[in-house]
Length: 321
Image 1 (cartoon, one colour):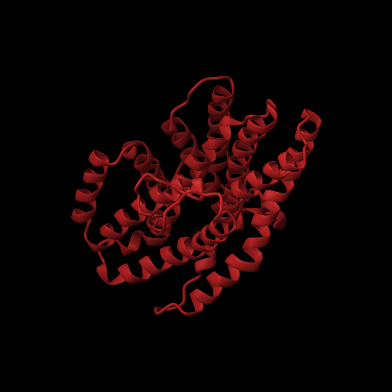
Image 2 (tube, rainbow, N blue to C red):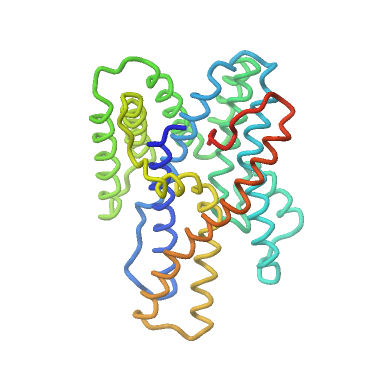
């Protein structure tokens, strides 16, 4: 995994945390700390996922004997961590949530049904599963993948937008392996600037499309990769890399933690704006901190154990994110 992309992943996870934290702070305390632009971190993750899967598995296309290994790697990367967080939150909130056993079981599959009980952030994982399924079909035979892609584009709401984000990542991966005359650092600057402009437009009340974010993310990712290939690494500091490594855990746990902290503040009678600012600061520290701890103590050991149990030649799953 490119260190620059891990650093960018950390930034994207931070954007999503600020988005949810701002919306909760406004809901409970009326604080003007909304960060609607933070949702664009998810668009970045979609493009990045397309890049990573293509970069790691392009040689597997049209080779169905490699399907099982691909499926196992994707399963290990997504499901065990998601199941643990889902079941923990469900157990803690069992008395206050109105979710049937059927809905809970369906949520555990991450099937793209549109419903995201317990963990609202899981909606993005539904699209990850769609993309993984399409790529798996690409491994079996490109014709199957094309038929499935067309069906998804017709029948699944919003699929043209989200699937295009993944496809932009696919294009990045293919371009990254070719000679690009523009220096990588220049592409990275242009991509980051484009992302910043789109975020500013949204913060100012505008409504940039997911595709605008996706194009900016594509240029940024391509620039970071080409720059790192040339020997220039962005965000190589160990603490930044740790945040990138823990980004999936942070993404899964941050919203339940934020919600619990603000509800606890209400129960303690903390209602003033000053108290709200303190609760905001506390949640900003605790939510990512819990995600990092979960990554180090649970996610990483579980992935390592499942990697050891891999019924194929051992693969560096922990670095294939």
